[in-house]
Amino acid sequence: MDPNIEAPYGGLKDQAVGVRDGQIVAIAPMSGLDLKAVTAELIDARGGWMTPGLIDAHTHLVYAGNRAEEFEQRLLGVSYAEIARQGGGILSTVNATRNATVEELVELSQPRLQALMAEGVTTVEIKSGYGLSLAAELNMLRAAKQLAEQNPVRVSTTLLGAHALPPEFRDDAEGYIDLVCHELIPAAAREGLADAVDVFCESIAFTPAQCDRVFRAACEHGLGIHAHAEQLSNLHGAELAARYGAWSADHLEWLDEAGVKAMAGQGTVATLLPGAFYFLRETKLPPIELLRNYRVPMAIATDLNPGSSPLASLQLMMNMACTLFRLTPEEALNGVTRHGAQALGSAADIGMLREGMLADMVLWDIAHPAELACQFGVNPIRQRIVAGEVTHV
Ligand code: DI6
Ligand code: FE
Image (cartoon, rainbow, N blue to C red; front, side, top):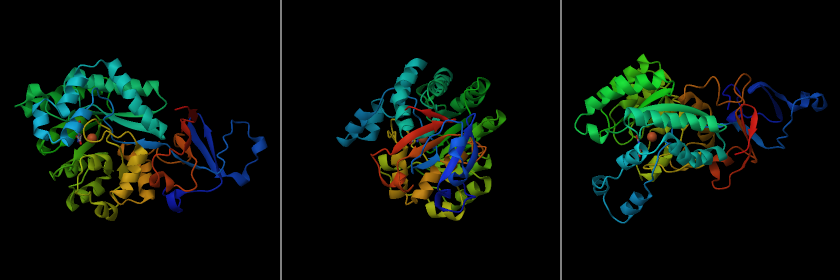
């Protein structure tokens, strides 16, 4: 996936990858290698393809409860508003999450993380956002950190305090944003629990002015910035986020040319979430052609969450990025490697196979990299390697 290599996918044939202390220290042709002289452990790739470890740059995989019954009710004709009146929707996940301990959150989230890792994910971003109080948001982030300790995976954590308005602030959005800026962000930063901050900038969530306050607080505490923007309408949230040098703006179905331009100018990644588009049966497509024209890097992620994308498969997202958004398989693979890394502010360390980068990689039983986006349901993974160690997941 190294753009300095001109071949499709930055692909090189018949290469050896040398790893020491968790880092890639050499990539060189097999023909120049005297295998008998190599004292290190050898892995024979037997003609497979080696890619960078996959990166899922947008998930809400820590939560309690589930919303399958709502899904069923809606298909039986109960309206979304009626479900919300019965305490359903996002707030049902908030209730369940608030009532769970950190240990319970870890236990409930492990199978979802496991599913991602089994398909080759070596780095995953995990957001809070179902706690909406100081204690419950920090507990979600603690659960994410604990998952990172217990699994061979890198985790980037994001404080999404401004996800929804908690019931105790029903008529006081500004008061809740005060809490996010003056308590949640400082506490998460102080305890080293968050790498970045995120917001849901939408008519059903928070206004651009409120998101602006959150971004300012994030900058003051040295945290990265993500934004849920232009998912259901165009409030110019992506442009606002780009002005703060955001790592990524995500969803983006309603993004316009001015927004694309602003993102291009700041190097903000467009993180596309085809699973939410599919699950919510959206019809408005993100402006792929504009993003290409302005050379905005496109990442692809699962948005794994119980309400709008209960889909724990990054391979499925690669397929949907191609079928629904018309990305090429090469763009899709870039979206879950190099551009995913950029979306997490980690482009110097992960997302490419290159000397000096971390040795996170996946060996696939495939004859061509397009297979990763084309076929779904037959997981072609042979080996998953994190920091140079073969993992057994
Ligand atoms: N956008 C979404 O699609 C999800 N959150 C967000 O900011 C919805 C999350 C949920 O319904 O639980
Ligand atoms: Fe999301």
